[in-house]
Image (cartoon, rainbow, N blue to C red; front, side, top):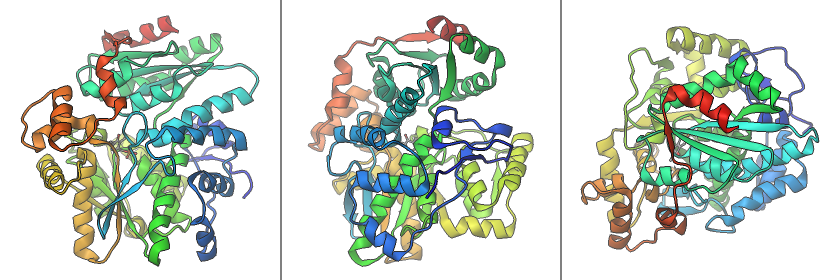
Length: 488
Ligand SMILES: *Cc1c(COP(=O)(O)O)cnc(C)c1O
C-alpha cells in the first residue's frame, strides 16, 4: 500500500499527517485522536502466506501493507528489543490450559506487564524518528500512571538522547513493585514524581498541560515540544496489532478454526489492536472485552449505551482496568461509523456524560465484540482454582475467565486465546489473599508464592528490592507545574 495518512477522529482540515507525525505529536484537531483512514484487506491466500512468517517479518510486511512508513533498519532496531524477552523465538508465547483455551503471555518483557509489548519498540521508534529530522528538537514526554505504563515508559526511554520523561504516579496508589520499578530506574533524563492525589489527578494534570499554552510556550523557548506516550499514541497501537495477528494465525493454521480473543480491558488500546486485525481479514471469530466491576465497556457493548452519569470509579484488584472514560473507543467509533458521528458522540460524552448508539450501530459493534464483567470475589476464586491446576495468573487475566465461561456456554467447541496482561509477580499481595496466605507485603507475598508453588521470581522483579530508590520525590499536586519546569 502507499503511505497511510492519518486523520483526526473528529474531522478537521489537517492533511498529510504521516505515521511519524502521529507518533511524535499525538493530538489531532477538535480534541480527536489520529487514526487510520484506510485498511488493506487480506484474503485466504494472503493469510496462508502470513502464517509462514516469523514475528519480525510479519511486523515488517504488515506495517508496509498498512502504509506505516518506517525505515527498515529502524524497524529492525525497534523490534530487536524483543530479543531481551523470555523466549527469543516469540515475544508472546501461547500456553495451552485446555484444548479450548490458550493463554497468550504478553508479559515476558522487562517490566512483566503487557505495556512492554508496545513501549519497548516504541521508545526506539520515537527516538529514531527524532534523529531522522536533523533539527535537534528536544521532547518532553509526560506520563501519568496507575502502575504499569510508568515503569514500561521509563524503561523504554531511559538514556535516550534529546528526550526527557516525567512520570507522575499517585503516592500510595501503586504497589511496592511498581513504585520500585520507577524509583530505581537509573537515568538522568527521567524524573519520577509521586503526588498526594489519585490517578485521576495525575491524568488530569497531564491533559491540562498538553493544552496549556503558557506551559507549551515556555517549553518552546527551550526548543522543546511536549508529547505523550499513553495509548492514545498510535505508535503504541501499531505494535499491538501484530501479536493478535500472530496468535490467531498460530491457532488457525492447525485446522482452520478461527479463535475468539479475550482481552482484559481498560483504555481499550489492546482490544483496538485486535479489532484492526479482524477488520483486515485475519482469522478472529470475536473479540471479548473482559472488565472488572467498572463495567462501562460491558454495558456499552451489550446495550449500545455509554453512560457514566450514575457511575463512580471503583477500586478493584485489577487496577489497570479501573477506568470510566476509555480513550480508544473513539477510534472504534470512527472505524465503524465516521468522523461526524464520532464527534457527535464524543461531544455528548463530554457535555452530558453519556451517549447512545442506534440499533443498527449496535449491531455493527456486536459483529465484532462480546463483553463480560466480574467482581473481585470472582477474580480471587479464579486465581485460587487455577493455581490448583498449576497456572498462576494475575488478577487482570483472571477477569478474562468470565468471558471464557460465556463463550463456552454459547459455542461449546470454540477455541479461545486469553491475553494474559501481567505476570503474577506484579500483583503478589492480591494473589496471597486469593491463595489463603493473608495480608502480606509485596516481598513477603512473592517469596511465599514462589516457595509454595515452586516457581521462579524473575530477576527483573527480585533485584528491585536491593536497588537504591533514586527518584523518590513526593510532592503536592499544586507543585507539579513548577517542579517540572525547574527540573528541565
Ligand atoms: C494496561 C493494562 C490493561 C488494560 O489495557 P488497555 O489497553 O488499557 O485496555 C490490562 N491489564 C494490565 C495488567 C494492564 O497493565
